[in-house]
Length: 443
Image (cartoon, rainbow, N blue to C red; front, side, top):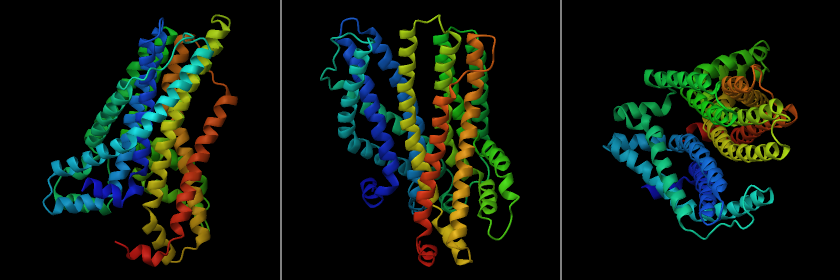
């Protein structure tokens, strides 16, 4: 059954396959760096770089895998619910999903190994050119890094299934079936409690990093940003609704028959859970990129003349590689989420068409929604990065205002908005072009 779902619904698993491919290739890349360190004299720095980057890759892979797997399951939610009604146990449903994840990992691993090996050689060459690795360093033909990468990704995938199958596997079969046509109205006490604990953890980390040296403070700031992202993912509907309500106020004032903006503002505000799912990946991309930029630019600003220029430039370059890696994961999560959410609303668009909405109105509504979603994600991303950024600035000086170069930062914000708007508009225009009568009557 697992292979059958993969064959009949390939589009539903495209985002998950891309995320798993990226996870295997990135872990292979940095695992190969650690392997290179073991064959190179004086290669301890290589091991540190590979280990640090690999740790970040694992955390990001987990976050993105949960997100993309959740939408893969949502695409087959009705089928899984039907299995529950014909006596399939929750354990069998979870096992089916685990087989699907394991099967995808096996499919993407060989090309991901090749991509990771090529990336490792290119990265090592750049390190050698910058004097960050010994001249004789090379990537050995060791089979352990790719195998470990696949095993690590399997572990990540299995952990992701625990979270992604929670809703479909709990409760009675009738409740699972009812859940296919209803959006959850609340986030639940356990999710709220975990979110508040994550917020508390961020506060503890911020207090801790204020008194740390720059290197330790930078690592604590990154961990704090990740904890903030977890808190946002858990508590997302509430902050998302607050932000979109404020941002959508001008559009709601434009109420009128031709105002797609008014409809978009009301629609996004009324579907907080759907909005939260859409904005969290955008916030992930913006929040973590902001944290890395703040760390790098604040160090250079406050320690100018203290650190040698070469050391400062090398730190900036390594942080840039980290930002690029995070951007890859964030882009995959953002594209998969927005395309999946928009495509899933085809019945809603069809009903609007059948009751008299024109294509022009739908396009205007779609455009306004995409801009609102993108801006909400950017605002939440900056909010996620703010506490740890302020704490990090205090760790370097008495000034709580972090420094960031707007010339480098603005393209990240603009790029995130353009990415989100383009993805949602492309999927939406394709969806509203479908025949409404056929879409509404489709099972």
